[in-house]
Image 1 (tube, rainbow, N blue to C red):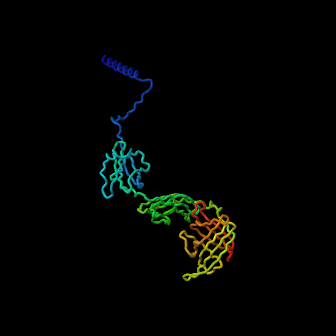
Image 2 (image 1 turned 45 degrees about the vertical axis):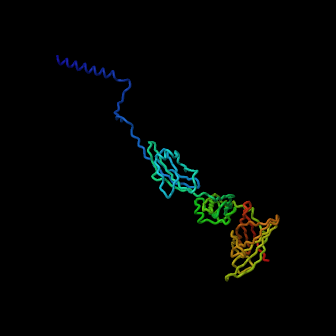
Image 3 (image 1 turned 45 degrees about the horizontal axis):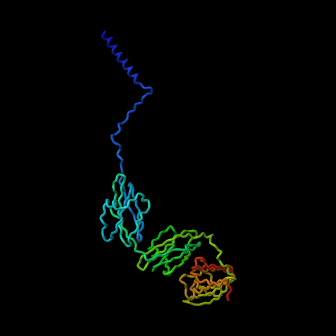
Length: 382
């Protein structure tokens, strides 16, 4: 009897458990996952310390420019103070920089500081903050000295070119020395570079128009002009110019001469025979006369060669392969005498007894920059 009671009790308990379990089952099954406990705090955010550097871009008479390189910072603040190279920089703290300086949020461009004094040393202090407020400051300020007050100026104007010449006008004010240099635009020169290796401009008082020759066609060049004043202040000016393509060279200005007459004489110098030829070119509208010199023993035929008229001009009789300064070019229709020729050349070739003579002279007049003429035939000796 005791055993039956026990079995009944077990049966009742199991039934009760089944009933309880069934009543707790929801309409949709539950999937239980074992998850890790979340920490009491969010994960720590690691903020890197910022880096800061500045480099000088330029120092002019009353302004300086510098570039900022910074990482892992939100702002950069700079402070510019005058000082002296002979002494130590002024004592400046990061707090001084932030309270007295200028804050920059976008430092992708060069920072310019103006309204400075000429010939003065300045110190550039800088500090930066990251998003957590951690400060990064320069260990040492950047120092630079502004240039002397300029009492000299130069202006570049009337920029032009042919396929082989670069043409420009220099107008100076207060210069004792002026030099220029023309290089491909891929090169960069300083004022000292130009003054050390450039070509002299002879006239430093008034405007000079220059037309140097010998450049590649269809090429971009930079004209550098540097000047020095009587107080040794320096100034540099630049301009870009692109030479024309060879097939773009206009031939409209070439004058065709119908005849060439010449006289000649021989002279012996230092054991060498020199021939001088006075050539007169003519057509219905023009007459041009040039004298050239050559190493030759035959005065009855004009010696072939490339004869040069230099900008310095050869006084008196011309040397070998030179054009004398006593040229005359006249427009017979208008009566105008062309006297502003600066320099150029006369190329003489001969093939099968026929001469080809090409005159290419550079003029100071920008509007009519060239005097070009050609002749093909046999010169007549008078």
